[in-house]
Length: 329
Ligand code: ADP
Ligand code: NA
Image 1 (cartoon, rainbow, N blue to C red):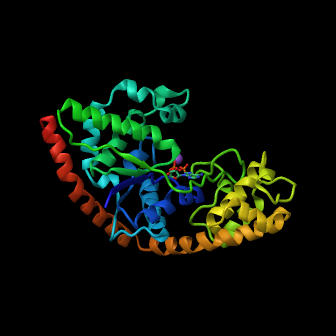
Image 2 (cartoon, protein in one colour; image 1 turned 90 degrees about the vertical axis):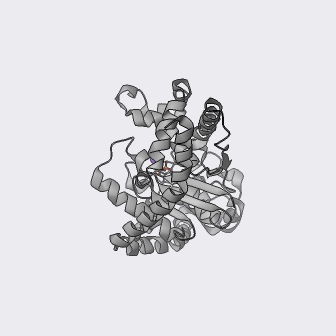
Image 3 (tube, rainbow, N blue to C red; image 1 turned 180 degrees about the vertical axis):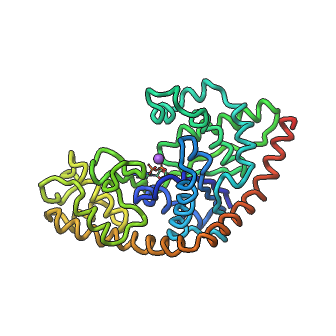
């Protein structure tokens, strides 16, 4: 069975885009892969995080993953900072990666913007740690969104240079796993921006901890245009908000956008939003309820994460020890 590594930052409350774009795929990958899932708290602090909030959000993310169907016994779920192999291999890779390679990373440019000098060195060298996250387990498959493709290519460049520099074929090449349907969910307030847990407006997103009332209210307030829904896809042209709501309906109901429009074309947004609310509540409300139940017992969550970290370390420690020996440590 092929080994998968995937990480998610424990910053903010997971939103519907995280669920449809990442978490739901993770749940499916468990069927035919050996999965290692990590709350990457070391990546989170590349931007300052309030310590109590980081701790709280690590638990909240863990609870949402469990409530969504991640199986911590058949697979591994842990937070990155608890397994020292990440930091150890991350440092070696920081010394392997070239400054010129890091300079080409578009995500750093996007995140740092014009104020480059004022960001942490960690934000800049982040891709070296990301390569270590994967290769500490010699994982060969990584589910990634489009935004992470460049970092994955860099991870392969780092592995190749390590192998070349130390005269070995120790690290394998990594392959991206592209989800079969890549649902991109947009903001409820602005159809041109992706839904994000870091968007300042809470009205812009469905959080995976929202109850039915909160979901209904957010969808009622979601931005739309005055036209009724078209009965064919072509009629969504230039209507980002309408397209997004149809896309969310389709992704959650397991339908194509065409099928959604065949059923709801001609409806105004009043009735369509009511139908959409039902579909969203069907998926999100049970996950939210289970998340709240899990969060009521933090000792149990912490024990589960510790168990995950122990099992992750058992896999990573021998691999990283061998890499350290190759380096001359
Ligand atoms: P956020 O923008 O909410 O902070 P992250 O950058 O932490 O999300 O991404 C976590 C995972 O969720 C990634 O795999 C990313 O591709 C996916 N993801 C995030 N937002 C969306 C979205 N709006 N639509 C689809 N997938 C998303
Ligand atoms: Na983010």
